[in-house]
Length: 299
Length: 183
View: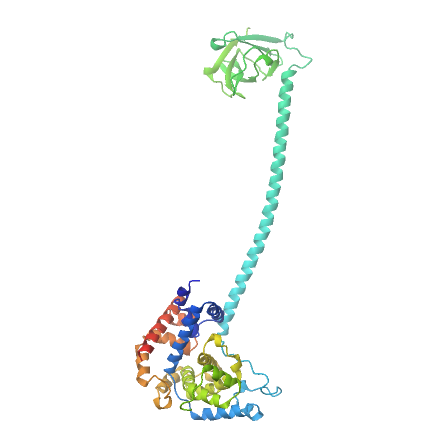
């Protein structure tokens, strides 16, 4: 505590001259007991007050002294008791002098209204704080529950996703290794029209065969002589329909895929095929500068 | 009042605790003018002030074992009893006196030098101090000390912020202290 600041705040003057409400008064008294400097300041103020009230000193009527002398002489008798102001009398059933009536001395009575108001204020504040606390605890509990719930749901979502991905991978591999349905062999089935697409430029000498069954609309692709694509890239087949390229899906290339029939997207009508090099997973629109090869379907 | 006889505070307290009448008489002779003055200033009329004074001395006599030296000197304790008894008396329904009577009676506050020889302050001293104390500072001391108003009541009645009451009280006491030193 900043003692000097406390001393100069004016609270000690208010204390000594009896202006403080009870709560603040006991606060000051606690601090007086703790800080010698504050105590010294209070003492000096009390002396000021003593000197100040001396200014108003008036000698009282001498009758009062006589009466008081009488009272204290007869203090322990019934007569002496009777001479006292009413609220100082010792109750008659009590042995006189044994127990003193508690005195209100140091307590400056606060007006009851003010105190009540003060009490009420504190009660309301306490109630509000308690309610807030309870509310906060409940909310904590609620949000904790929720967060645990979200955590478990998140985990199960991740697990589902992983499972799905694993399944997808397995399916993809299966389709690569056993491409054709055992019943249908597109290579020997006359319903399939096979078109060989020859590479040009960089892809000179490379060939891809595409078999298309106009009846069932099934399309198969065999990447007979195609290199593996650069990292992050993949070859994509396009059907040429009225001079427009329509996506037929990406396909695997390289030595492992050379003998494999890969099923592509079904096709209703087309005049030719083209192959482009696209980003892995394919593009929805062909990159025209990446066309590796194209061929017309022989009519 | 014995001319040469003086007691220290400790002796006074012990004497009172021992129920010594001569100590009580000494206490009365030395302190009754100051305490009566406070009572008179608070209740505003002599008869009521006399009753207060009598009650105060009986309380001092009976409750000396409640006196706590750590809270202040014996005189301060007696002043507190006097002020509180007087304010209680003022507030009790028996003393719903008209404010005007008080104003008239304030004339009785004129100092009576022959009756309080032990005081170092003379008549001129009182008027000098009271005159020099600025009006608003005098009012705040009066309201607080003699009328027992709380800070809130003073702030409300003087139409100043609550925080200002304490500072103004402090300034008033500082000025009072300076004036008292000049006497």
